[in-house]
Amino acid sequence: MARPLDLSTVPVRVGTDYPAPYDGPCQNRRRERLGKAAGLTQLGVNRLTLAPGTWSSQRHWHTHEDELVMVLPGEVVLVSDEGEQTLGPGAVVGFPAGVRDAHHFQNRSPRDATLLEIGTVAEPVDCAEYPDIDLLYRPTGYFHRDGTAYPERD
Image 1 (cartoon, one colour):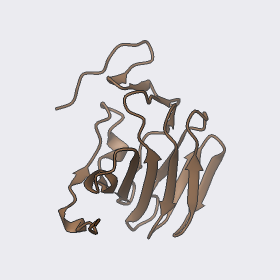
Image 2 (spheres, helix red, strand yellow):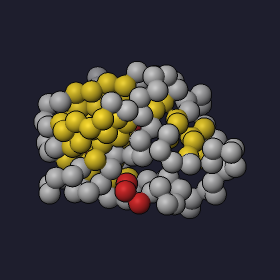
Image 3 (tube, helix red, strand yellow):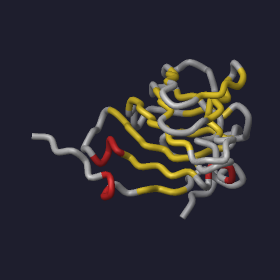
Image 4 (cartoon, rainbow, N blue to C red):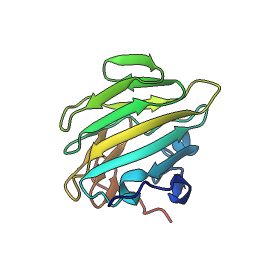
């Protein structure tokens, strides 16, 4: 029988593995990989907490992974190719794989905001494009648009 997760035992990852200087806006994000802790292999589920001024990621879209995001407590601004939209508790937005709608969430409020991120796991084929910056993600790491690899982070 499945057992409920003890959330106090789920590791918290603070920050990002983006190369500098693109890591800056995401340094104060906290992510708990709930799906991984529950033993899931085909579905990623994360609880993401954004401190004031923090971004969920750089604006991106995925080639092979669907994403669905629900705002729990707090308020965020969704920045996508369609513009900006403020979202509060209970708001849900989805991003189908392969659709070139670059997006991310920014916490512009004075309080923490928490998001539930749910997505398919498409390793090792998923790639991500970051149209605003000189960054591509491939299964082997981060690259400049010219194909040159960024150095691996410690």
